[in-house]
Image (cartoon, rainbow, N blue to C red; front, side, top):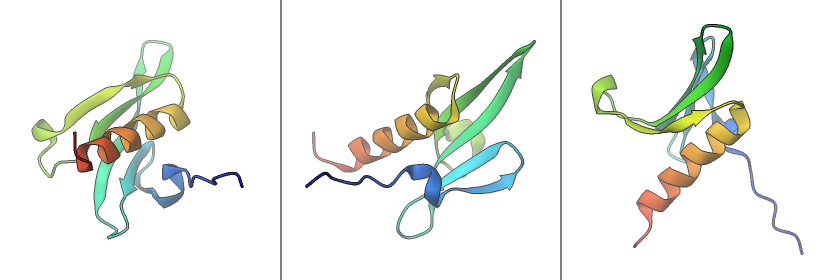
Amino acid sequence: MVEQRRHPLLTAFEPTPGEWWLRGPDQEPYAIVKIIRRGDEIGYRAQLYAEREQDRQLVGYYKRLKPAAEAAHDRYVRGMSRP
C-alpha cells in the first residue's frame, strides 16, 4: 500500500494575497510562506510561525511554492519530535 501524504498547502489559509499560513490539526498557524520579489525575480520565503515577526525562524528561500511549504512543514514536524 502506498502512503498518501497530505500536502501542507491544503490546510493553509491566505490572510493577504501572496502569504500562506500553514495550520496544524488545532487550526493554529505553525509556518508562513510568503511570495517575495527581488528585481525581476520572484520566489518564496518560508518561516516558522511566531506571533512577533522578529521572532520567526527562517526556514529558507525557494523558487516554487510547493517546496517552500514542504520545507516549512518538515521543519515544524522535526521540531516536534525527539532528537
